[in-house]
Image (cartoon, rainbow, N blue to C red; front, side):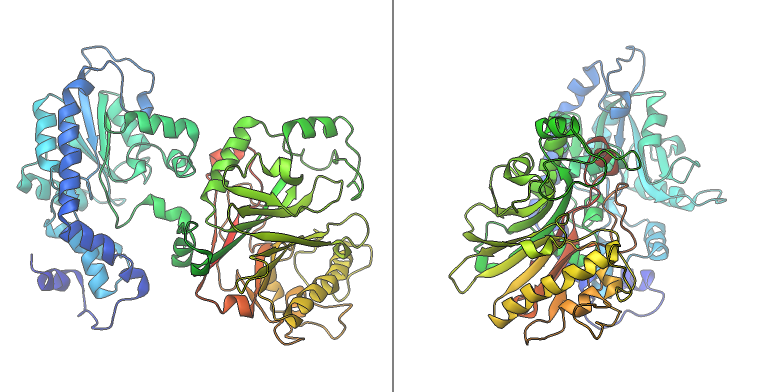
Length: 579
């Protein structure tokens, strides 16, 4: 169909001639590749020809390709089935995506329904031939799609339109309503396709799965675990791919984008760590919640103390009124190491880590672990620096330990003695004073202790500004600076009303700070994250550092099941990239 006719059919009003917004322009490369690149057609033809060649072996195998039937061996009389996705697997919807690019429109359910109703999609290269081959081999085709049937809709329009579109193209069993399983067609058939695979598994042995999204093969939780490089699921996927699982390339959209969040989050997730440092700098911070080796935990647990130990004590608390500290073992460190591998940063400021030995359980090959504070207490701060980046440790900021029971700051310089030098301070401030004015804080209360730390931190910032240095403060501020930024600085430096306003006062000149979380919606790490509605982890960059390029911010989130199973921290890595 000519594009002008498609546009007219999809848009209730004439499309604007304005350039599309950045969000829609981001689709451009993916859509053009699918529509214009011969490599796209050849790639899908290759996948489908391989799948066709594997049909006989898959049907002959006694077990199932589906996780839902894992470990089951069906009787020889049980019929076999092939489950395929529809959109971008059987049918090519790139004209609809092109409409969004050209018109600047965001995804809209009504426009999507109009596109489905046009029944104009064509087969993905190789899909029709594969479906016919599977049907001829005796495997029943099931089309499991998240095209949607709405409550009270009878008959389902999306189902009728999809069947008509595919029948016109010659897909096998396109006239069989039982072969099409749509989202919402039954109360438990939601976005997660697991219940629909189980529906097929109740009567058939599933011998092959084809889709463009990992949720076509596994549950959403398992898909998240695969994104996080869960070892067991990764081994399973690698064993099945090219044998009984076949993934069709789709660069336009997919569930893999969900964990990246906003457009800024997507840019921040780009891995450019191998580029020369002059091209970009990415700073991260991560509170790792009592990270220590298993042997250290066991030794300290045997002599744990009531209350919070002071800085000079080699001890951990065992209060009955608080959750037990996480005892982590090898599998937990492996899972955390996969998160560390995903952090697209040159340097990570670490909190609640018992020095380099503990950090090495998570930050493995390719990292330098350095500049940890000297307190005996296992809650230390320090840094993980990418291998090859030169650095120098500066004297720790012991004055932040205002009472012998709070935490010093770790101070590092990257690229020392060069024009690219950046000074960084890793901090973990006093907990318990997340919001509200500090002006009336009682001396013995958490807010009183935090108020004493602010002038110390401000003096470090002012000293860097006076040196005309590029610098940043990273860490767990134990303060929701998004809310704090709206409070006045206060008339007395020793008794500030608000932390952020006191630190970013441009006195001396150059002490103004860019806050990484400014304008960012809070993204919850996982079910373990206890810190909504705003982050307490933050990165404050000097204006001279922020002025080097475009800033993007992201939080590296966790799959909930993996996080709980492997005792992940209640914080996740936060990343500020300066492009």
